[in-house]
Amino acid sequence: MDEPVVLRPPGHPISRRDIDPDALRIIFRLHHSRFLAYLTGGAVRDLLLRRPPKDFDIVTDARPGQIKKRFANCYIIGRRFRLAHVHFAEGKTIEVATFRRMISPGVEETQPAEFDPTQLYGTPGEDALRRDLTINALFYDPVAGTIIDYVGGLEDMEKRRVRVIGDPGERFTEDPVRIWRVLRYAARLGFDIDEATASAIPAHRLLIAGCPGARLYEELNKDLAGQTGPIFDALWKFGVLRHFLGRAGADYEEDAGLFARMRDLLHIADQARAAGEEFGQAEMHALLFWPWMEPLFADHHPDMAKVFNDAFIQAGIQATIPRMVRSEVAHIMSLTVQMRRALKSGRWRLSLRQRPQYGQASRLCFIIDQDRFPEEGESFDSLLAKAFPQGPSAGPPRRRRRRPRGFSGGNPSPTGGTSETV
Image 1 (cartoon, rainbow, N blue to C red):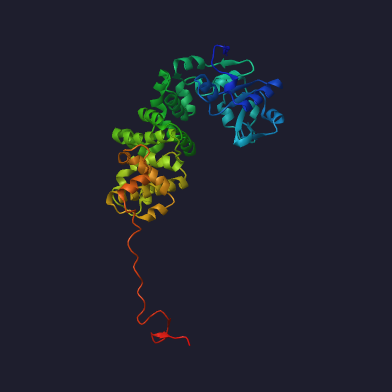
Image 2: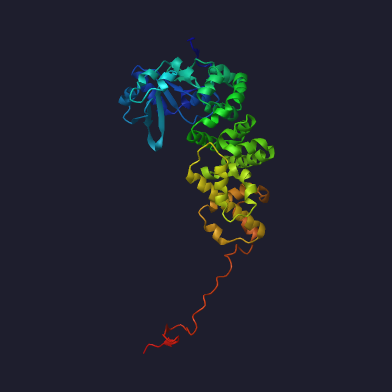
């Protein structure tokens, strides 16, 4: 293995002042115990880009048991490869992993009872080479203030390029989700994709559909929780949508106008989140599927939730969206359809406000019908006030029950009249 490139200050912009103090305490305590300990992954990448990191992950040559002995607030998780999670106040957790080497097929097939986790432990260089992207395989040593690069990540950062470590075809075959990660990081960072990496995507993208559905759902949520527009642009450009969204993804890829409609809805949500709005998981899924489902809602079916569920099942969506989430999305869409019809017909019911998904559906209406909100800061409720100056209708008057013949308010008598109390 080649010697790493070591970049010392002032050759890089990273400072200890930019690192979480608790992460620094972990690293310095391990260093004091004569272990290597580095900051790694996205934290180093983001610090080089002068962005605030989301997480501060640490990698070390200390074994999980040795880490736990030095931190009373440490918990060990995992079965095959054990990780140390060091807990702090306000729910903060910092992950500390032991250097690993590439897992061979023989080790993957070993039964849990026969598995020896020490087979996975490795050196810093082996740990860097097993990672997926060069820009995520850099180490930062806060003790020496140096960046350590075994895979050419510093050069790729300088060229603003996303590149897979090793042969792209082999790495995509090992784990097809790496294709998704390549597109995600290129979109989020505004980087180009290395030519060899980009060329390998069309030949291997169909493997994504064979990944566990729960994992695909997890990856989808990562994209819906962040800046969605650029990521879905990349997924659409490389023809990946159909491999985790089934027929819905294929329709988006085959109809540029349909995709543009979905992309616009997600972009509006991105803008709202940038202004401080928070969108739940079900709301983002409703926006994702709305343009695809909207033609089906035109049939005025009495049970819109059933329409959604039936279409969803028939689409063969590979990402395993939990039944509870699907149900919530279906009810949000159903209420949105009713609210939009009420706005067009002028027959608004107060009962719609009493539905549990009213707040979510009203925001969906707001995003779908942006042309109805010309004034900045206008809300859905202000639209209702304009559409219904007298207030929404409480519904048709209730019919009064007819009293039995001969009943005048007293106690009914067997003869049909009333009996008097003496």
